[in-house]
Amino acid sequence: MNTSVSGFSARLAGLARPVFGSAAMRFVAYLGLCAAYLQGGLVKLADFSGAIGEMQHFGLAPAPVFAVLVIVLELGASALILSGRLRWLGALALAGFTLLATLLALRFWELPAGQQRFMAANSFFEHLGLAGGFLLVAWLDLREKEAV
Image (tube, rainbow, N blue to C red; front, side, top):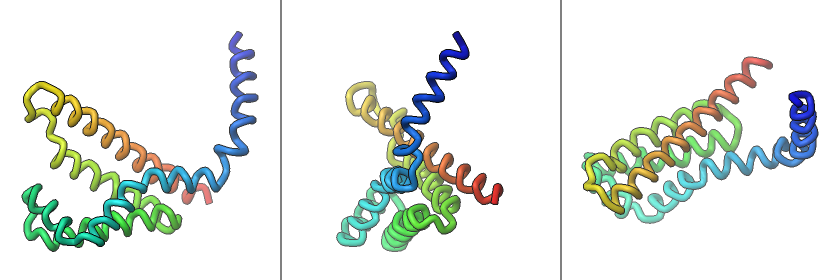
């Protein structure tokens, strides 16, 4: 039975590998991981006063400096990931940023029981998963560099 399962698994992987193992699909995956940061950075850049307001909302001062730093981080780290140059560094930067922003913005444990807490908790754990995805990108990139 185990041989049958492993044979099926190998055949299934052989069917999936040409599409999901391709360089194009890998780029699409990186783009998906970076999408929120690209969108966030571009929106903050286009509406800098809104970006300053967001920083003020979270108590970050001086707000203009934090707004610039967040824009540079979101766009710069995404560019590193998408370009493949220092991909591991961009991924670690976005993982750390995501963890810090999640702890700052999604403090579900401070909310009363109910729909708002439920939604904040879901978003909190989704962001943990996103940070984990960036850690995986960094790990894979460093592992590939080591093999060369």
